[in-house]
Length: 118
Image 1 (tube, helix red, strand yellow):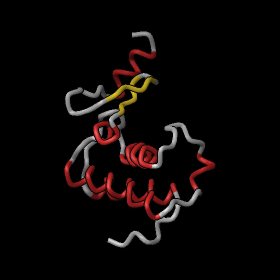
Image 2 (tube, helix red, strand yellow):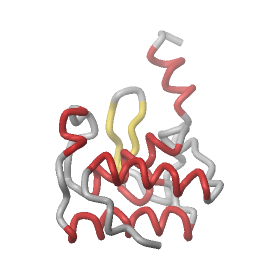
Image 3 (cartoon, one colour):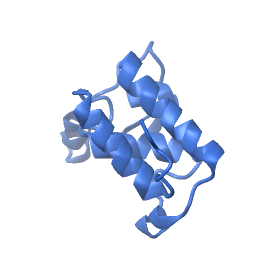
C-alpha cells in the first residue's frame, strides 16, 4: 500500500472512506457511512474539532500525523473496532459522550427521534 501521495486532511479522509468501503465494514456506532467515520478518525487523530470548517480540508499534514491517522484506519479495518471505541468518544443527539467497549453506542436514527421530540 503506497500512501506517500496523501498530503492533506481531505486526502486522508477520502482514502479512509475508500479503504473502509473496500474492506466491507459495517457502520452504525455514531456514524452510518464510511466517509463520516473516516472524517471522525482523521479529525480525532489530528486533535481537531469534529465541526472543523471544510476550508481546512486542504491543510497539509505532517508525516507523524499521517501515520497516526493511518494507524487508526488499519485498526478499524483489521480489528473491526468501531470508530467510537477507537476515539473514546461517541456523538449522540449533538452531545459528546465518552465511549469504550463497555458502552453500547446508540445508532443515529434514535438520536433523530429524540431531537424531533419523541
